[in-house]
Amino acid sequence: MEQLSRRAFLGSVGTGVAWRGSAPSRPNIVLLLADDLGFGDVQFLNPKRGKLPTPNIDRLAAQGMSFSDAHSGSAVCSPTRYGILTGRYAWRSRLQQGVLGPYGEPLIGPGQFTLQGMLRDKGYETACIGKWHLGWNWPMEKGKHDFTKPIAGGPTTTGFQTYFGTDIPNYPPYCFIENDRTVGIPSIPKPKSLYGTDGEMLPGWRLDAILPALEKCACEFVRRCANEKKPYFLYLPLTSPHTPLAVDQTWRGRSGFGLYGDWVMQTDAVVGKVLEAIDESGGRDNTLVIFTSDNGCAPYIGFDAEAENTRMGRVKELEEKGHFPSAGFRGYKSDIWEGGHRVPFVVRWPQKVQAGSKSEQTICLTDLLATCAEVVEAQAPATAAGDSESFLPALKGKTLKRKRAAIVHHSIGGQFAIREGKWKLALCAGSGGWTEPTEAQAASLGLPAGQLYDMQADPAEQNNLYLKHPQIVSRLTQLMDQYVNNGRSTPGPRLRNDVAIQIHKPVSRKAVGSD
Image (cartoon, rainbow, N blue to C red; front, top):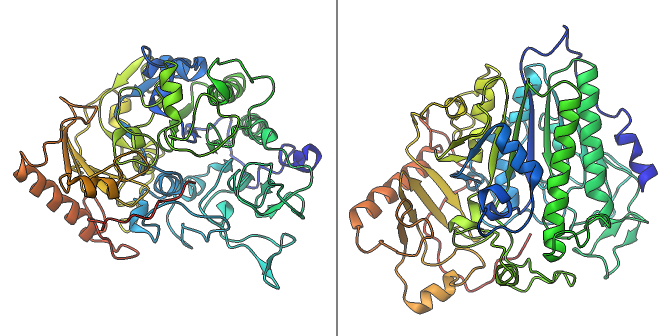
């Protein structure tokens, strides 16, 4: 497998227009996206109840700015990634709950305005290295997937000039993909002993080789662009610490908290290697580095994770040992509560951001597009990125004067919450995800139809004020309706959602699956 993937490291990048001049005038932009890393998994964010060392992420925060109130656009994977790259909440698309399944069709439509396309048009070399999980148009031949043909609809059709990675490590096809082709031909069925959904696999495929390959490819890309004096945008959606817990042998047993703890440490080490490549290539001062996660920690992660099963509540084993992946927040990945979508968020940009600074301002990952647009002096068209507002002033130490009143949270079951200032209104009775009480359990318990929390006084979401403040509930519900009807949450011309949106979901007793 190493031989098959080697070409991705040795020059497959670099199809863009060469930069003219001695050095990039605009900053390089590197977006590091962890997968299922909880807010409390990062040591500096959870010093009292976080037991996993994350020295590289901690160092990044010490060299830049950390946000304590940053949120992913969803409590699960595909929707958050869509929001990052389009500046649009994914619930405006056809994906109303859950994530894209194996061989799912593209979620980003043809010609849709994207972060990567915008940066490409501003002269940036754009690369996606890692987990895509936003769909492709897989070619078929006689009812079977044809891996000898190009795959349309993937990263290189959305504005990335190059791509290398695995679509989703626990979904077929089990192989690397380079640009629009599989690296090798997946020709055998995945053995039952290998973690993941059944499907085609490349002979000799190893899960523990994925993350090191992504690390190497990313570092090579950084060094190459630096040598050629090109400004670049690197989107590095890591495959960790999501299952499969494919920990390299050099990291096994080092955390004292099972494979999950080891996997978080290996993730942190990859961040360190990419930072090292940036710094050693001379790009430290002129590179905007952003580190974050797509959602909270998965509740099926436990202390003894060798079996890799998805029994709910295994995270309690970690907490019994003293490590709390959601810190003091309620819930985990999938949930409408803070543990589902409040994420680590760190920015380093020595030319603009004060080292060791902190921000308590509320931001959403959909805001990355508008922020990068302001950084590079670009502008999204009025018909795009309707849920993205720049937080560049916050990076410069200024108070944000928001044009948008609130941000919206979304659970795996499709339940909504809206956050305005200190108030958070959840338009559901339970977690909206896997944590108890689920929606069905909440209905059987006779809980109120919604939840209202004062996030300043009650960040752990223990005191539901829904029945005590009907005026606030009514006002925030109307605001949510306005965001849906306008097709956007920022000021601008009215836009269209791709499908009809229902903000109050009927209770279903059918379990929502895992990604």
